[in-house]
Image (cartoon, rainbow, N blue to C red; front, side):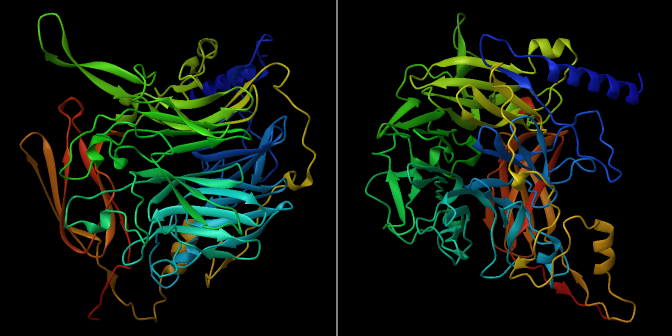
Length: 597
């Protein structure tokens, strides 16, 4: 069967699914994928495709939502899509992001954490990090302002993982902890007039943010290093920790309320309930909120990310809920049964009757309270799927589960559904982001950018949103404050490279030295890989073991100074890698080797 015939059949199958009605007796999950954007000639393909990796999807109202995508070139450019109650459509071909975040500031106003542009590399001769380190301000149907700073300077913006607004004049954006000698976590604040840098003095990296009950909550990563040679891999604080075990949930008060930053303790938020559970044993909480409650889900830290000199604490995936003025643990060590913990055989026979069992935790990627229900939908992946990095793979299943306030899973769904598979719909990637603007009205996006809608027959289609701010395609992004030269978002790479080439009558300054050199590797006893290398400048690095496109093992990201360095990675003989990758992120410009001619 030709590729064209297969594409046409897929189109027919997907369009048939889009036309299939939901069960009248209740809400169900159904694929509702928009068609690709129209081409330059005005033609539109009848074949739905994935929108690419979607970093965030947020709603102001059930019939007014936006998402930010990395795009699926060349058909789907990076940018913003909008929902009007009837269908999704392309809203902006600018301000797309590798991951990206969205924060609503008003009914026709929102902010995005977006990727940087080529202008940020001015004066360096090569591209600096651009992932998720700029801001776009949307209002009244256009991008009214764009914010960025040049790379490798004291005022440089760093990657941001969270965004939230308490109103049009009070928005916060948070991300990575600041490189030494700076102290704190990188944060930006919009006060209605300007964007300013206001680092979080508590110094923990911000991984998620959500507005709730008149304040902004932050899920932060507690980092600890027991290796004296790696002080840069431990949180640096400007304020002393509380006498309690530090919580990985922090709070930003609204403008005019003091103190601006508050650190909630483990005595307040019950993520940690056992004596042997250190604060670093959980990943930063993933947050979700609606008008009446907030939920937080924290995955256990992967064993490869434990601080050196420590052992596995045996932590479980933990979910907490705040409602009616109190925090409660919904899932975690306090309960005898954890619906997200499974036991698998390690193949070690203890007796003739039983084998040793190893506890593994499912992982939650997103959590969304369903308004008025005392329940939340979560996107879930199994340990094997996470370890194999099959998030966007051909066999990846999208799993969503409805978790009640009592810690019970009342509904578990694997997508595509049996009916969809019968119609020929294949796997579309794991479930990533979930959001619920109303009761029995939720959206889920897969890793490949496919949209599922949870709704009943009555709420499947709503009144079309008539706002002009979301009707026209936005194609322009203003110049960034503080950047001397900005290239167009849509400028071809070939043209950028051509402009970067020096003219023949200009003397070449030389070449940049490679960031990594002198790489050597060896396998130590017990299957531990040791990689030794030389860094030209200070950089963040991570060692990743691959089997094809699957990640089978990885070290945590570390910040290392220039010089001879090494990383060690414990390998699993059941998932032995075929190749090794060293991911790098330079934190300073690479030096030049001057030409002799």
